Amino acid sequence: MQKPADMFDRDREWSMLVRFATDEQPGATLGVVSGRRRQGKSFLLESLCQEMGGFYFSAREATDAESLALIGDALTRYLDSAIPFNPTSWPAVIEVLLRIGRERPVPVVIDEFPYLAQANPALPSIIQAAYTPRGSERVRSRTRLLLCGSAMSFMGGLLSGNAPLRGRASLDLPVNTLDYRLAAQFWELTDPRLALLVHAVVGGTPAYRTEMIRYDAPRDLDDFDDWVVRAILSPGSPMFLEARYLLAEEPALRDGALYHSVLSAISEGNHSRGGIAGYVGRKSNELSHPLTVLENAGLITREADAFRGNRTDFRIKEPLLTFYHAIMRPFWPQLMRATATDRIWQRSKRKFAGNVLGPHFEQVCRDWTLHFAEERFGGWPVRVTAGAVNDPANRTTHEVDVAVVGHADGGKPPLLAIGEVKWNETMGNGHLVRLQRIRDLISQGDRYDTSHTRLVCYSGSGFTGELLQMAEQKSIDLVFLGDLYA
Image (cartoon, rainbow, N blue to C red; front, side, top):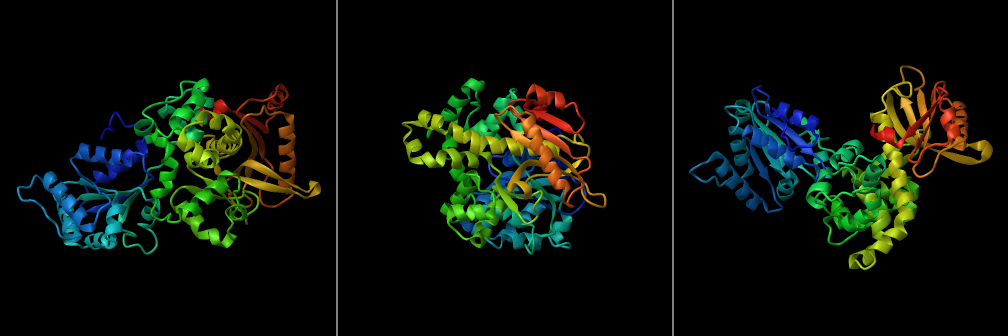
């Protein structure tokens, strides 16, 4: 089945949905599709139903009785029934949904499923009962039921632990944001520097370019500042409140002030649990729950330090949240009045470079190394993260922006490479000397095999002639900004 011509990328997601929906095997099946809002989930599922003549229902925030009436009306129209279907219970609805697939495989989609489950918490158990292995309607049906939702904390728990639907689904499909390369293509940005600047602000959410900014992209590097002001920082733009809505849309994030403070702490460079606790004025053990909730919601991620196993760093996954908390939140009252937006942005550009752009470039370099560099560093990376290395002789600690760990085929895992990242600085011999010192320190431990560790410099601004000449040595790699998009 051909993917719709107006669908950008999503080849993997489309093929998995088609394979699930066209499965000719007897018996109804269940699938779960999740992802944050504005990633294109509904577009995917509506397109699937249009192509296969399936049933699509998008739930609303409503009472249980109203939701039953709404899906009853939708089924009446879909089945073209002369007698209106007025269900009084969800078992009756599920029975009709299963009957749709008696003659052929048919996709049946319930979008925004968390709204229904919030009004009727028993709904997952009702579906579980209908999907018992020997249930009569399930056995005779080839309905391919797809439950979709944007509340990540809820959807993440739908198939986990002791949840009623645990073990019932044959498809669990996350629809993620576009990676930085696909985002550049989607925004039609061919200049790597401009592409990375835009991605540092809005990330890879497709709807930010289409529905929300209405295809307003910066024309070139000279237009970037004006674009930030008109498309992001202006109250008239839908993007102005988007970062605040990202938290408001998650039902599990009840204490908004606390969660915004945690995100602000991370955006200010406090990545450890202790640093975050000090910033928000809480004890470290009091942050376990909010950090877990933010992680389950897909808004932050935790990474183990490459060299200190007992340390975990937290990073914001959504670039727009970092931009909001670093740039917009400190000046929110002034931005709301829209009287000094240009001056606020000009004043904030240094902080943008240090708190937003620099860390974002580091993450993009780690992503490139893990997903696109393949065997450039002498082996296939299995883990790429940051870390810190103690230097007792000099009484200091060295931060490592990129640590590339290979597969451990018995013995110590190979440390394929360590790297330093600089966005707006021409890198020279001093950066290489620092990496050599770090490699020597790591070699003194027994955590990694460093016999073939390469030294890598990632730069958004280029390298000195001296370093370019030294890079001809086999153990040194220089990664230009253009390499990340090649």
